[in-house]
Amino acid sequence: MAIENSDKPCDTGTPAHIFSSDFPDFNFDSVFPEYPAKSGRWAYSLAAITQRGIDCRRWLKSRPEKVVVVVSHSGFLRVGVSHTRFANADYRVFDFVDDDEASLQEWKTTEERGGGMGKSQKGMAYAEPLEFPDSQNDDTRSNTKASEEVVEEVPRGNELRVTMNHQLYASDLSNPSTCDG
Image (cartoon, rainbow, N blue to C red; front, side, top):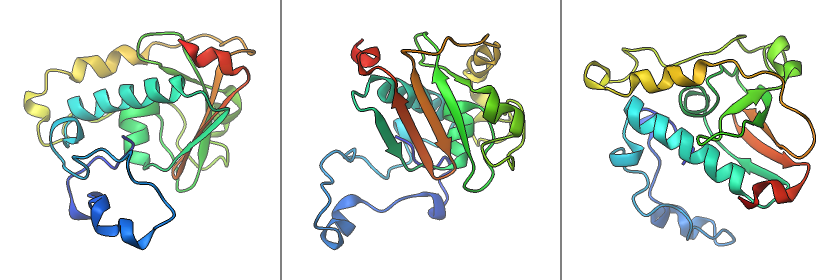
């Protein structure tokens, strides 16, 4: 789910069946069969990336593990997942908000520093209207504004903790039962 946004060759992967023999110790059965297509849910459009971000957050929130690591790209994290910018190899720490979209609330420690290393731009970062080829006809642009609401301090305890990095997306559950439903 956490693949790069654009449909440029440098942002489009290689089908797993082509390189799987080079990595015999890895199981590629969970790779989506349509990967690396850039159509449908994988399309280079604000609507597709926004929905993929919601799906990604919901999936991560539902994981039973204490720690989950997903390799991703800053463009997808910014547009689809966290609505924050990431400098190269920087990270941020989030808690899940209890809502239908598994929204995230950034910890003050990384929010105030501009990421864990203090190299990322501070504040929220949303997709620009002309950033996507279909933006002139995309009626979902207003949906991205709904997540601009500021969420007050999230209570610490049994919530899911999420760390994001330009190359790392990890979550740490303080209580695994939090993801049971």
